[in-house]
Image 1 (tube, rainbow, N blue to C red):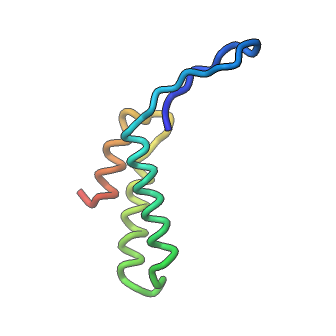
Image 2: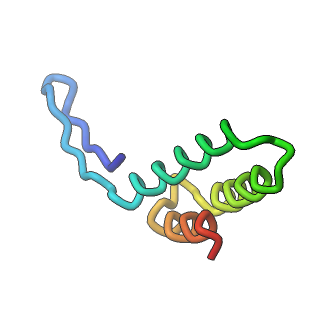
Length: 79
């Protein structure tokens, strides 16, 4: 979860920066998919979680992470 700079092929290292907000979002998505695995698909709660997940993923763009990550997390949280 972060931005990595790779070394030249002859060197064996890479330098990465941990992205805490991306890690939090990935954790949110993991919780959501875990809930969907255990909630009855016929329940209202299942579809509420699914709707929040869809709204969140619709706002996230990995190519524009800095601009979209905050909005994606807000939609997941229902704000």
